[in-house]
Length: 385
Image (cartoon, helix red, strand yellow):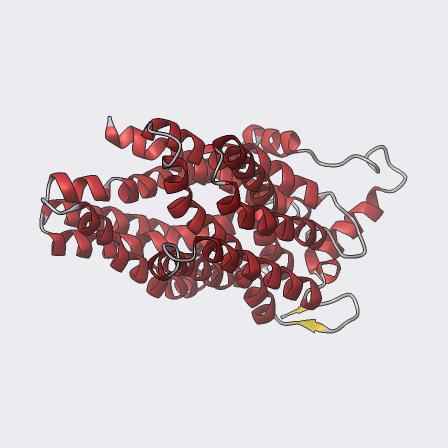
């Protein structure tokens, strides 16, 4: 439990719930976007490569936008705080753009414009919502809070699948409307119930501003470039090595997910649908393991649990490779996902806790995304060669 500026306690559980709800709403749109926009593009384009290029546009934008917007929010000072104003402005706009996608699908140029606009806006506030956790939650409790957020994010895969199964064929526009409404509702609740200006991290940032008053650095804001250079030049390589490990593990995770369907079809002789379904049980395994590994990390140390989890992840992939049956692959993927949860839950928490100041946690959230998305881009390509 943290304390607000007025002396009233802000329960960590409430903060975690509200942030998890916001992330759930955001990721619901992203998952439906990834599964249902390609068929809309297929109506206009015959090239799978070009469709893949357009679908990868959001990841490329995220690499540049998310650290910059996280940094912008770090340097923002308003009566609402530094995060909520961006969410209040960005989430409804992203919801409107997402809602417009099926209406724009009749013309390829218009569809691409709406896709680009949605990706631009949605990437802008993604690190900002996640940065609310370290703003409110003390370092020793961040793993369990982030576990709840990761569980919420994982549940959106199932939510998008249910929308696709039951609604997309008969009600395509309604299918896009449901996540849009959820996003607007979540930001309304977030803005009504959470005062970012009362977070301990925001109070610390204000105190740092007051200490700088009257100095040459009084009006100087920390830039993304400054943060990156500080990490690269620091004789202590902990932060740099952590970001590299995020890149590498992100590549391994993305490769293990992206190549399952071809493996199932070419090695196990499964149909495309059967091969694609191999990963579903592992999603459940990830959700089941996320909170326990967070508790273990807070008790025994995050780095120890992350290293153990990476070993379990590797063992699971070896198991799925050695036992070349559908059951063996599913079992291996479940073991791998349970191990991976220790890394996915704790890596960004370690990075937050290594930040030199509460004034840059938004930037650090963006840098985590750069490492993770970069790995997701490079991993499948590296493993395919």
